[in-house]
Length: 229
Image 1 (cartoon, rainbow, N blue to C red):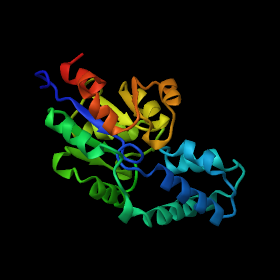
Image 2 (cartoon, rainbow, N blue to C red):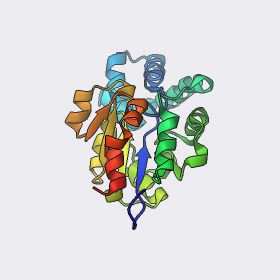
Image 3 (cartoon, rainbow, N blue to C red):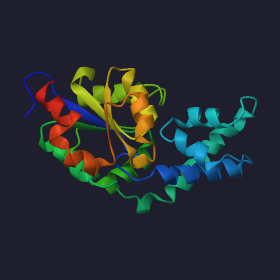
Image 4 (cartoon, one colour):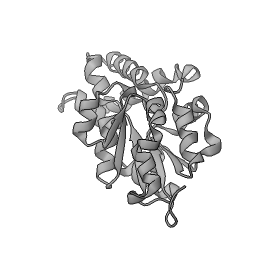
């Protein structure tokens, strides 16, 4: 059980963390860029998945480009990704980990910066709405990752303080944005980012996927959060 006082909770990133979608996003972005005449290697795109659309496009395209195209590239990515909604699947152990956290007395918030329609599709695939305290989407944040806005919104939605919460995410952008708020991050390599890169960004622990974190739950940073360490 949690100690008395302020509630304690977990802010879960969704894409790549709870839903196995990072490579689907990579392919969708690759096609979106190609539709507008930009040849961007998938390897470069994948490393930026988890970053906000505007920042991702800025990182991948020349600064002197015609920026009038940017919105249509983002829209194309969304349309291409939507083809996969019906087939989205949780990462290994994702639903069980979310339920374990809730059963332990932790507030559980999905901290996604995707749009509400995409988040709805991912929530349906995950099937844990009955144990969630709150869910954030793109409309809850003025700036997207690596800015910390989405995690700030998730803290507020969950009634949590940064010192009483931890982030679980799969991208270095999760770690970077969480650190700006004083939040620790448990990293997962389920999105395709290496343990070394996640630790270099500042992750306090790294696991292969939600199942591995669940298997080590009693010895993980989540258990220490419950104990108040």
